[in-house]
Length: 333
Image 1 (cartoon, rainbow, N blue to C red):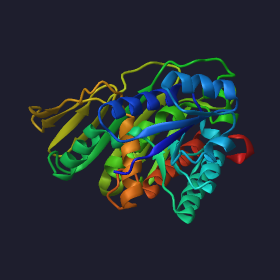
Image 2 (cartoon, rainbow, N blue to C red):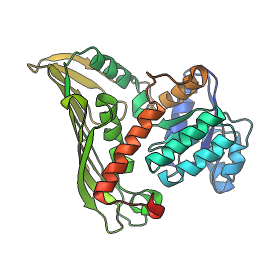
Image 3 (spheres, rainbow, N blue to C red):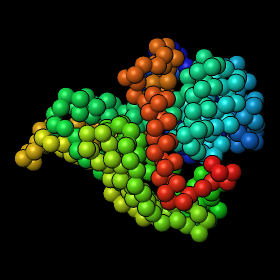
Image 4 (cartoon, one colour):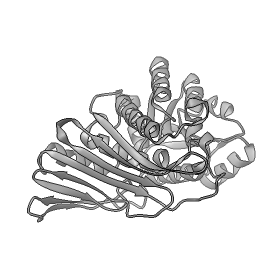
């Protein structure tokens, strides 16, 4: 695996978690480094650099992407800025790992992936759930036919989050709403398990500012399978997931999108096997960094954990959900 030197664009909360996992992985023997951080102000970048022992702090994103000690940029800003910042980094010849959702819509995602292909660099969506060891094992079990033909995916992601109308989660200009921040997890999981939907049906409740507070989504898939998805930012629920097949089911623990375990049951309800998450003291965000390094070495393949086509399919699905809900971001995005 190539040794990737990381730069962090947007030193906020999610970036802190990502870097903490990279530092932990390095301490466990993985050959990687975080060499630079960039923010809109040098003071913010320097504070983050001091916290994590990062050598270079930059007071602009342009300076960060020009840093020749950086191979790849992790983009950890709100969704509305992802496209422009990814294109900035790609133009500078950097690989990019872009926080989920990769962009605000499918057209922007296509633009990012096309630019990366033309520049000869890797662009990868930081849908960290896809790269967790538990989900590699889950895919293996599903491919083995252990629970028969797949019929139903059920997933919920609902949290009680800030109600301040000026918070980014409630601001249309920043891509606010439950779907893109929370619902993206069960949507992406559903498509990973059952493939892109053949039809989408959605309903929900919008805030006074026009972003979705909650939504229920029904996806139909080839072969007669169905996904039932609920997301909300105004109520805390059990964030579990379940996959039902003709010969059994898999129940994924709360919180299903993080480093969690799962149980496989036969059709008669008896436990077949139990998978417990690996406890290495880290949250699990390091695995997406490992995947980017692997892609740098080996390039894309159809069996990659998250291909550009799969990422775009998730955005297309969420575009249709937003259309049905009536959520439109400034500029028609």
